[in-house]
Amino acid sequence: EVQLLESGGRSVQPGGSLRLSCAASGFTFRDYAMSWVRLAPGKALEWVSAISGLDSSTYYRDSVKGRFTISRDDSKNTVYLHMNSLRVDDTAVYYCAKDLLAVAGRFDYWGHGTLVTVSS
Amino acid sequence: QSVLTQPPSASATPGQRVTISCSGSSSNLGINTVSWYQHLPGAAPKLLVYSNILRPSGVPDRFFGSKSGTSASLAITGLQSDDEADYYCATWDDSLNGLVFGGGTKLTVL
Image 1 (cartoon, chains in turn purple, brown):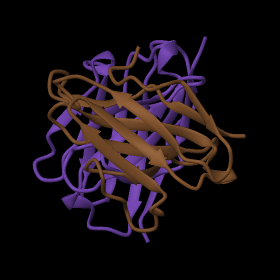
Image 2 (tube, each protein chain N blue to C red):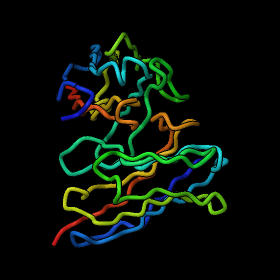
Image 3 (cartoon, rainbow over the protein chains, first blue to last red):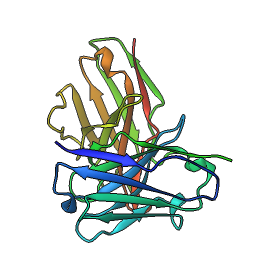
């Protein structure tokens, strides 16, 4: 059974940093692209970042470029999202999602999310 | 303002058919396939349709995806009360070099 378990979300002040983790199990992790998707209060789903499974190519939405870094450790079956210079509008539930294979936004499995609150 | 445009709301009665539209452009839906997601409050989003028309195993054939040009649609037939949820389309945008979601459609089963 595929499972994705996010952790690391908490309350942080503007300008602060966080590292989110997503521990995966139930599939050959290294073969699959992974993404982070967020849902801010009262807003729509928003893709944040992706990392491919073959060569660990990375992709980001414009609003997080230069502030967030996605990475993966295939030996630990874990994908990370390093978040720096956090802003109030980064407040959201952050979901980890597995792509069907390559980076394409066909997320067949999702975690249950971890809450990041950026507030002074 | 989302890159993909969806109606903010839709409604229908049990048993009816409802269609949710998703409008994009030549840099996204015009050249890439669409996925559709169902999101219930407090739950993880669920993949309903991918590659325009394909359903993952376990998704009933009441959910039907289609795409033409720069627009896509999700049709739900035989509407049930537990279909009440938010629905999102998503695709890759070559100009942005990233994934884009629609603004979401809140479906109400009357």
